[in-house]
Image 1 (cartoon, rainbow, N blue to C red):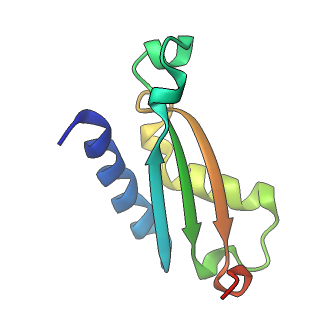
Image 2: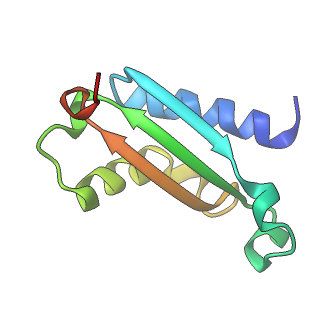
Image 3: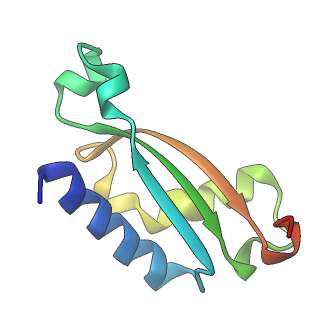
Length: 94
C-alpha cells in the first residue's frame, strides 16, 4: 500500500466516524499536479464524493465545512487540495 493509499484509508475512516456514509469514493489526483508547489510539500490532491444524510438541508458551504472538520487532522500535511461533492441521499439520482 503506497502512502496515498494509506492516506485515503485514514480519510475514509474519519469520514465514516463523522457521517452515516451511504456512498464514498476518494480519488487521488496528485499525479495531475506533479511539480506543483503544494504537491512538492508532500500534501496530496484528492477528490471525494460522499453521500450521507447529514448533508440534508445544508448549503454547499456548510457541507464543505463539515467535510473539512471531519478531515481536519489531515490538513494541510496530507491534504493539500480537496475537491468535494457532498450530497444527501435524496439528491442522488437513481
